[in-house]
Length: 68
Image 1 (cartoon, rainbow, N blue to C red):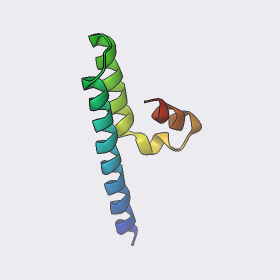
Image 2: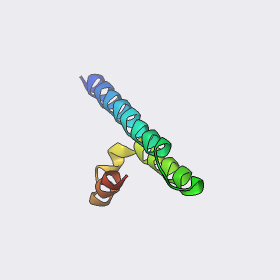
Image 3: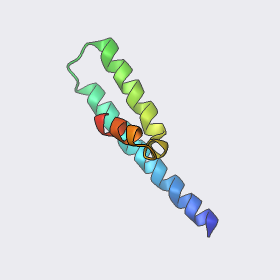
Image 4: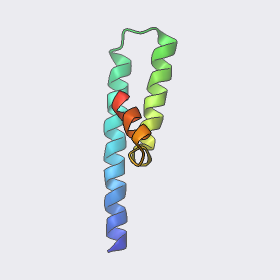
């Protein structure tokens, strides 16, 4: 039972990562900003997509996820 819950958590985390990384990539591709700012913002968003479950545990993390 514990392993099933861990597997479910891992699957949800992976799908969340994929979704948030695709959003970051889309924002990067269709942005009108200059190159250095656009690249830095995409890298930050990809890092946030890796640790989104941890970010949900605090109000500052949730706000950061909402802002992108």
